[in-house]
Amino acid sequence: MKENKLPYTHLMYVTKYSIFINKYELFIIGVNTDDIYHTMGEYLFRSETQIKRIAFVECTRSKLDFWKESGYKIYEFRDKYPYSRGR
Image (cartoon, rainbow, N blue to C red; front, side):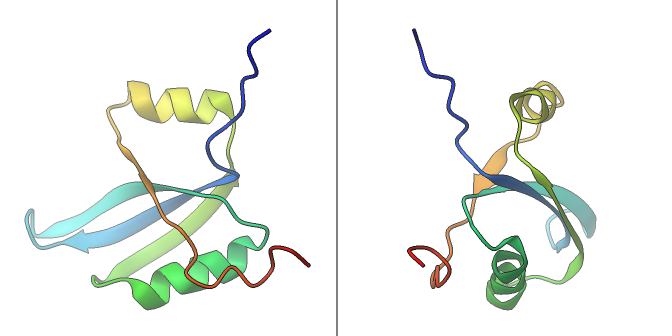
């Protein structure tokens, strides 16, 4: 039987400014983390553009399918310092 493992633990919904279209747009970011608040802070700190809002949800197959069907690409973000893993 094929295992249906999800590629991410959480999805972050990031609204950030795009210089290409001169307005804010939504980006879907897939992350694997034990501490989503740490990951959100690290994403904000490492961002090179102005972020208006960050929200998150637990990743499910239906959410991944919805965003794919809606035409969004899911970008991956990896913690540079995943301090909470391995504790």
